[in-house]
Length: 267
Ligand SMILES: [Zn+2]
Image (spheres, rainbow, N blue to C red):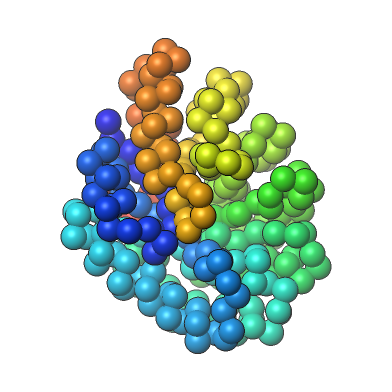
């Protein structure tokens, strides 16, 4: 089995997780910028985090022969403070030339507030100006449907954003259709407690097909399973899906999306 982990918060994980992922066939990992579990007190905290994502973490992954890519942004959870958000967004172009940066993400909404929307629009504009791919985080639970609609509207209303260059992550049964119908890519996050289980994700593939969709584990500092993608692949096999279909979802699809960035090298 071979797979890409297209959304893994590796700075939160121990080195053993890298060993396990590579042992299970992981060929590349992509790490979006994320909330640290606490609010950073200044833009300097983000500067250090961006150094970690673009310099330190690729070296740690390379010890196991694993290519590591990243996405940069201030996450929606810290977007209420628009002054801080502006300062962080100003830092991002300094890191854009790093060889492993794939784009802007994971941007989006958390509580669907006015300030979050404003910061989302700033990020989308930054991505358009620098011709970057976009990775979007959609809100949790009761805020997800409305938040997904608002996010898709922001992306569609921007004249220079092309939907095939944006992936909308954490889709579920009630949001996947509108994402795919509008030409965007969709990501399904496999979590043991919230978001999708493997069984639900495979049901979604059975209903909507596997044209522009991928699976990820997110594997952050909370309850999450870094091997969720290969485990879901075993479940797909148990349910009778062919090796070609499984390879398409967990390996080829992330490559098709990410290869739109000249930085991404097919592993
Ligand atoms: Zn994430």
